[in-house]
Amino acid sequence: MNIRIIKPIAYAIALIAVIFFIPNFIESNYYMGIMNFALINAIVALGFNFVFGYIGYISFAQAAFMGVGAYSSALVSLHFEWHFVPALLFACLISMIFGLILSIPALKLKGPYLAFTTLGFATIFLLFLTNQSDLTGGSPGLGRIPSPQFGELLIRTNWQYYYFIVGFLVVLAFIAYRIERSKMGRALFAIREDELAAGAGGVNVRYYKIVAFVISALFCGIGGVLYAHMLNFISPAVFSFDQAIVIFTMVLLGGSGNIKGPIIGAIILTFFPEWLRFMRGFHMAVYGAVIVAILMFMPEGIVGGLEKLGKFIWPSSKIKPLNPESKEEHQ
Image (cartoon, rainbow, N blue to C red; front, side, top):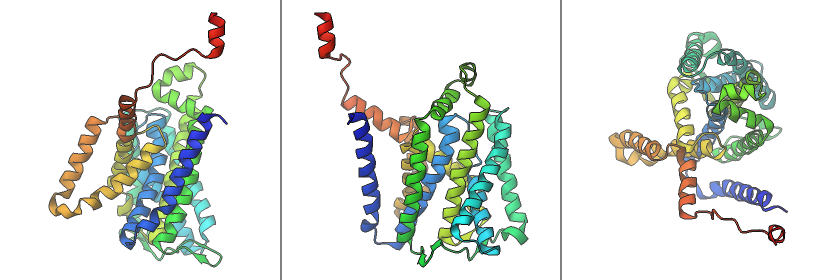
């Protein structure tokens, strides 16, 4: 088998093995919950990566998409007593519809204009959640959201939920991986590099921009569903502009335009404030300073910085030896 095929498979198997053994080393229920939050953030960051990393657009709607999924699933579960799977599918559909609606201005706007448009959408959505208290519970939020249940299996503990979220993360990361290496992925990267040149080269720019926003909304909506059913409670404050900035920073910190960056950035940025709590009043100042330092010295993110460091330590030979066939040709 080709080494180019074996290496990614081996890395994937090793990574999955590590992920599945992590709970054996975490005894604290609190830190197990933080790990679950990190994995949910990784799913949302993967979704945002489709817009920012693949087509190069700045959007602040990822927290709102997360809220769309969370509230859609929570409302049908509470008021219509839907089970988790149909509630999840309904939330995915609603999230994709909102992504489609938001993609319409993306066809005509770019840069700061699109960023402010997505910010406006997120603000309107947050005001809707706060003011429509009869439907959404208002500022106090919605409680008593049922945990996922499949027959007699009720997913309740943080350890059970960890494996549940990991399953979603692995599937969604694989989907993102396949898209990245497909014709669609090449089209998205072409739009990011030069939209006009991509259109002139035959890429349907309008179609792929819509697809990027819809997939992004889908991933974020799934993250919101997992969040709502894990905590059994949601409120508008969870899906505020601050959360959108945090998700944006996760992708920047880890590295955009690939699968590894958003996941690594989400896990680090979720745990980092917890690691600094011993500093009490100074932990947020140190937190901000470290993030600024990483972005200054690793503008491509942690993944890009480590790849550059690896190439510096183990430089590849620039002169390739002749293969036997080429030797015969030269003789």
